[in-house]
Image (tube, rainbow, N blue to C red; front, top):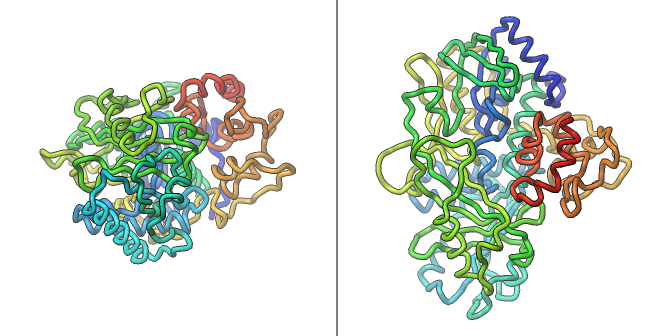
Length: 510
């Protein structure tokens, strides 16, 4: 431990940029502030290396905020024969749930309703898959107390878990468990702040250009000022934008779309309704209960050729596909009018040629450009820690860095009970929603607030407190209203909620 504060804010950003402008040399520069880049920064700094992470926009600006909020155990990859990635996913899920981030990742029940449309062979296939998932969990060393065993439940329990499920011919359900993030962007922020806690410099609104294996030009997006930073290793973790740093990289982005509903549209479920896609093996859509009283319905897997947009948009075809599929399992059909928001993200898949993107491997790769930049491409959110360890192991050997072995396997993130951040006492009862988002750090959010009415909601009907908005600015690096509404919280996914919370966000940015 260095004793460095975890707080990311505008003042710290200015101080650290000024220090770099004085000609400082560092061991590692990381390009990209998504989950992979943040994970690399944390791994590197806890090996004793000096680290600068730069992100052109904001933490979790790209793909890392558009996931299904799941920490997958790798069951789908086992079914397709990718045993290695399935086992690693189960291991990494267990590490997150038991050591790194038990406050952010909890067990989510996944319920497959047994309806007449599902024949005996399909039922047997799902049950076999769930049993294989139990085996993966045991192999990874994750106890059933953390992630319960799969089982069959009767029709009454099925309806209790998913109240709007179709009742006619319902023969119970198959229930299994996977890891669920309270929010993916919150995980990125926690990893980045933990890296800062150990001394890494986390710089948002800073673009990287002219990257080589030994230097990179950094451009402050707020002032236009630039500086050249020398580094022993430059690591490209820009995700779907990795090809802008190393033009030799060939990716095949795949778009995954989710729809957002008020949880009441699904009867306020407590399990993720899991519906087989007609005509597909081992592919499902999920209606997942989420924070803020919402349900996210996903997921598509569509080719997304062409220029990479900052904010991908779903197509009408994808929206119709998700609605049509979920309606096969519901008593009352949902339509476009029930959709209160949506989002789409691009998976940075490695281009291996023709075929459906759904069939492309989710393996990652570490590649070195002709001028020495190390890039990590592909992969999946669940394996971010393993990917970071892999690329850092390569960098240590190739660049002969004086580093200790990886420590992140047993390293608690900010907010985990075992993280040694001093927890202040709060004189008020804390909302359960705040504790779910901040874990052991929740008392600090309120105790450090200087605003009026810190525990009041930012708007009626939204269970985010004013103290959380202030903390986003003082401790989580939020520099704009969008940072607060779209990434530190997910209020902005629903436009009507965004409009109601906007005045409070503007107050704290001002």
